[in-house]
Length: 228
Ligand code: IPE
Ligand code: IPE
Ligand code: MG
Image 1 (spheres, rainbow, N blue to C red):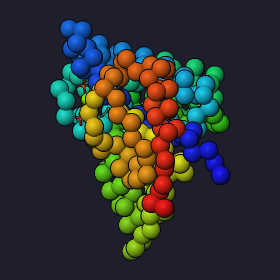
Image 2: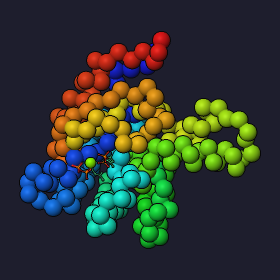
Image 3: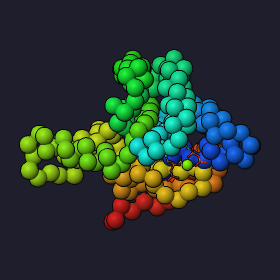
């Protein structure tokens, strides 16, 4: 029996950057900047711990509806952050998987993200999934459309799971949401069927190793029954 008290896959809704900044009378982008630092630290910790998969929600399909300036700043921060962090991901043997509708990003952006993903593709350590322009409903709709294109007239759950961005990965065991909201905001709708949720009021830029350990400790005390 695998030890279910240690998650294989942790997923995080990194929320609360704007309110973190507001509390400090700083612009929202300062919160997003601090959020990138928090992201890098969390990836480091999870990889050092030997976690199999870490998925982070960095930019939702709905986040395109934010003011243009904020969207631009967010994308720039994310793309630069991923590029800057690439050598460290290589050293840590991290494999990168980008999940979302990347066709909505500019060509230069898309090219540079795909190139980083490609260069890290032979790594065998932790899989880091970054959800960018990601929506859970859109992901399922895309999977179904793909199956229709393949000529299928009836489908199984495995057919759908196999066409999601997360194909081949275990489902998340633990989903953490920072920032105080208790909702999924269209994150991993299919994959979260039996995930344990952990909500904390801590804003994402303040989420550190101590807070992560708190979440893992809470998870370790849960009794998962899977309907049995
Ligand atoms: C999370 O922080 C980052 C993204 C959604 C991209 P927010 O920007 O949502 O911060 P709050 O929730 O307004 O505090
Ligand atoms: C969810 O946060 C998306 C990310 C963290 C990337 P939002 O701030 O966009 O979610 P809502 O609007 O509070 O539901
Ligand atoms: Mg938010």
